[in-house]
Image (cartoon, rainbow, N blue to C red; front, side, top):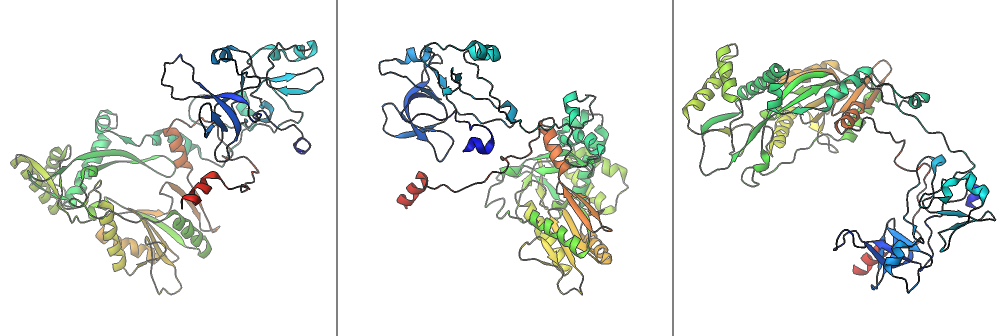
Length: 524
């Protein structure tokens, strides 16, 4: 029936005779590497839970499941294991998955073609005679151990050809040029910048020795200046009875939506993994907007013709007030940066005053450390303290969080205008059909935080957004994010898969209850 339906005979190479003798692989032998690794067993069926054979091991009274099985058709009771391992009657019955290309379908067991055209599975005990015509047509039949290539009359579907348009000087082969398939339209600018954007974080030593050392140095100085501006800590003598949290500088590149370099970024982070619950922190949970909410907001934007603007808050966590008493080690290059800030003398008086006090304390104290005032990056409670600060500000502006998602805020009682704000840590999305209200939100947030106005939405949360207000469309894509991952793990030239599942696969429930379900039912 199956041969009439598909036009070819089904693959039955993995079928075994019930009760046949065989050997299963012992994966962890206690003996040496040259000792036998096979265990005598009896085949009793196929597993309904996992992909494997159900066997009864010799000397045991329970059923085991194994994927590695070698069966013997004429295994006698008087034959020894040593004779069996050297005999020609061994047939490899391990089940293999069929490849995708039908024209290269191979049978992983030996097929013997008899005189009358019938096929038999397995190897006989005696020598095999093959007709001359058959031997001339397929000389590989005489070679023991080599599987014969089985081709069907029906020609398989043509293989799809893919190629990766990179920036290297490598020219694609002729096979690649035959039928190129592109998934979507792509800018060559994105491809040129993928390699640069794959390595985002580098160490301080590498940065200072690189050709871009000056840019990295300026980024570190900007970060120290932000800490001074927010008065993030006091310089005090190191306490003897309290734990000191470590610190380090994290350097990374920030990129635009097309993958080009936007700026160098430095961030001072505390080593929060050394904090102790109950002493250094209590609650740490801080919500972020869900991805489903982002999709819903984008759909609402298209439906109601809204405008979406994006803004970022610089050094967001430094705005959160710290409630616990935490001491941190001095960051690298702190004293040198403070000296430059004081010598330049071009900043406001408050920043200069804080820098002078810190510098004096560093030179005065014997073992100086930082007593934190702000929840800097890396602490367990940093994100929670920042969320509380931003939530307080948005509620002050008359917004209330929605019940399904506490990170989506709306203005109740609006006169037919949609006014929504979505927050994801330091990234904020403002949606409305009233452009004046959007500008007002930016102005109010800038009074409390250091806001970077990014204009209409383009790139955020690893997603590329393209909004066309004239056509009333908006698209979301993670192409750049995927390319960065492939480049990072060296998989940019791997062959793409059309789908992880077999096409037109229809799943059905098993007719019988599995043994695991029966066991759980009995135990309960």
